[in-house]
Length: 180
Image 1 (spheres, rainbow, N blue to C red):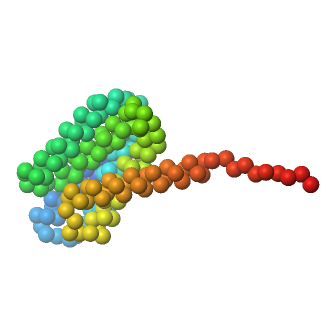
Image 2 (cartoon, rainbow, N blue to C red; image 1 turned 90 degrees about the horizontal axis):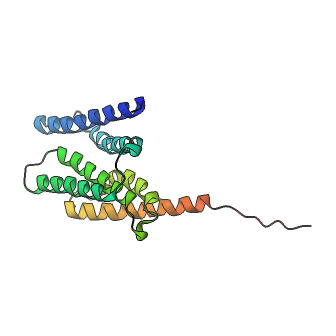
Image 3 (cartoon, helix red, strand yellow; image 1 turned 120 degrees about the vertical axis):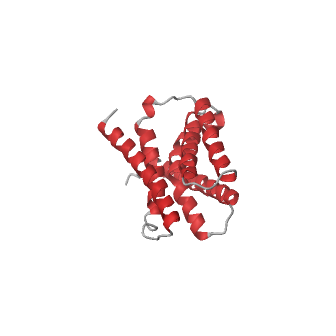
């Protein structure tokens, strides 16, 4: 493990603890002292998880079936905690792990229809949390299911748009030269 991978891993652990701890403290004390930091911490947690996974990619299993099982398990735990138990901020951490495992599932899937998904997965993973936060800010009374559906649809639309722009930008430019 490289020095940077270890630092990113420690950063992920630290920012995840800060996310859960600051949110719990803010709720318990009704203080707004750190309220402006919380969205950045929430997004930083997802980005650091992506960086840690990317840095460790060569050491992680490359079978989509195992990642699919992990994704279902993490997302089911998050859903169970949300709908059955009292709210805790670890639900967001568990859901982030589920989304990361789903991204890895799509990255390693061997379906013909998903041939170009690896180019779309990175922007989708990196974009889901900022887009979700923007939708939540724009529509504060939205239900969780509506938020999930609109965020995923918007995220993949933006990811496909970026993929199209990337293909357009990488296309060679041919100029016809006319002789005089």
